Image 1 (tube, helix red, strand yellow):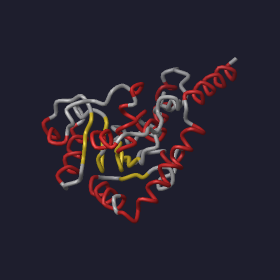
Image 2 (tube, rainbow, N blue to C red; image 1 turned 90 degrees about the horizontal axis):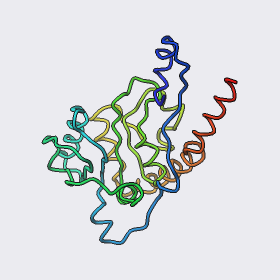
Image 3 (cartoon, helix red, strand yellow; image 1 turned 90 degrees about the vertical axis):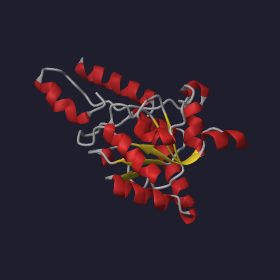
Image 4 (cartoon, rainbow, N blue to C red; image 1 turned 60 degrees about the horizontal axis):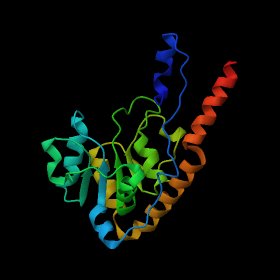
Length: 212
């Protein structure tokens, strides 16, 4: 399970559960070079790729960011009217077509808003894909994050909407651009060294060998 905090619950049910995080595929999730026209189409100061349907607090959070006047683009298939003003009206092409990578590469700040913040290690695949594609990631803090990535080193975090707005303001300042690039670089190195699907397959083999 990708939710490490659920393991005690599963084991009480007699399930031999283990924590196995989401991951990335370096051959798919990778930085891309774009034309100026592509940068204009995919780019923005702040972006979010995903759905908001059924996740009201996520929609309200994105609405707050948009209403503050940030250059925000939301990519995804959803119908929520709360954030329609910033919805691109489309979803990037599949990863194989590098659509998601283009959004990540062309955005100064890539957002992640996890649904589960109190479940230890419950992290979206979005996190690993953004980092692998060389994006600067600003994500909602989750329990156990420091066991996987280091905030302000591999990515940046926020605790609530007010803190998120403050971090966006801070990381969009021209003098901070180098810091943003440094975090993006270190985040990508970390995910490639420890969080690819090859690493996950090796972990599965290790667990199977241990059970024999």
